[in-house]
Length: 505
Ligand code: DHE
Image (tube, rainbow, N blue to C red):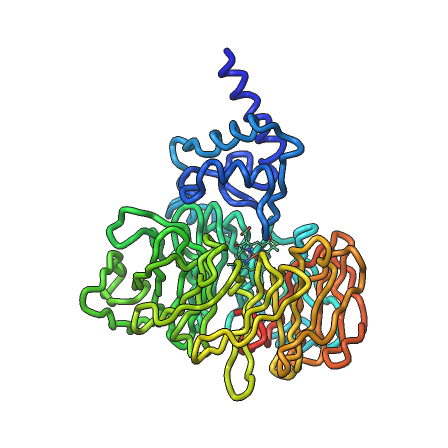
């Protein structure tokens, strides 16, 4: 009887405190899925601490003031209990979820006068909408409802016409920016991290936490292939932390959360360069067998790599594990051709390499990355892999941005309670903070993107009654405000498709 009452309590507590973000069925939503497989690397006492105190750098708040120690322990036991039968999201489910909104080809000409290459796409998470802005007039031209909880950068086709969004609960949306219409959607996973679009615009790769898969779709969102993600012996499966396009290599590169490997999946139909001894467990089943094409090539590592940054040539990745935030030397450089680690990186705290940017400094290329749990920007020489400088900031931040035509790099301190309202401006020559902007004291101010020509900067007042605040990139003066509902991220078509060194790819 007592056991039954306990079970009812834990379910009621889950419903009240956890379900809104993690899904009533524990399959994830804004927050990750809470299933034993996903929690494999988190010990139970650590999980209790997360529920009690929250998790830095995420939306997970602490519940220590609302739940007793026993209630927290019961919740932990509950989320470490497997769901039976295990939730499936395979060929059948993905295929059945696909929705085509536009069955006839749409006109090959923009329906507006604005420069189609200087549009901005703004993700407003406050009410789950996306706004499209004219980057010259700095005015909205359209707004539409998105899937729930989009996350990560939307990805563009090389001509800038189509943009693909990923939601945390697995939906991929294809949007035609020239016709301002959603073309098609598909649910590629139960709990998804991000998506990448191939440099030839033909493929979309989707990184999933649940199931443990990397899903390859064609550009019309038809399922092409599901790559189950596991170590080379097929014994340990893994969540995929993120997938990115490496267009000069004609491949997708994926970071794995639970297996010490980095994967490269070629989308070059001519790929036939599998070195001897390479394990290729997945065969291309249609027509002629083409080795290498859409098959993962593995690089074995000594440490996990779950967040990374490409070098200019895309031959190397600078990566870090998110698991060992205390280690001083936690980063590594992996050469994708040599298929091994070639250097260590000094990256204290929890670097957010996905937000890294690069520029020329004293004849060298340097990259800079913010840090999710320390107010620190690490600047690294991309030839010697040495840290050139660590710039102290007001507090831990998420994002960093610049532009080829700007002498400044912008960074936030949004993880700091006291300084979440302050943006700091770094002089890229002096490697020093030279200005601070605090337009609305107490309100979160983070994430910027430059216009195509680098003359203006669009920054987010990250609140429900928020705004995009436009600044003159040279004088740092406010130019105008566009009201928005919690505008989390904004993306300029030109900067993205030309892979500007000042923005994320
Ligand atoms: Fe993100 C990008 C991982 C939490 C807003 N975030 C990314 C990317 C990764 C990532 C791997 C790159 C994907 C891409 O562009 O293709 N994010 C993580 C985490 O591991 C973390 C810390 C924990 C988690 O909950 O997943 C995390 N991220 C958040 C948030 O809490 C943020 C602030 C609010 C939200 O909406 O979830 C957030 N992440 C963003 C944004 C980008 C992003 C706005 C795109 C950045 C860009 O400019 O390209």
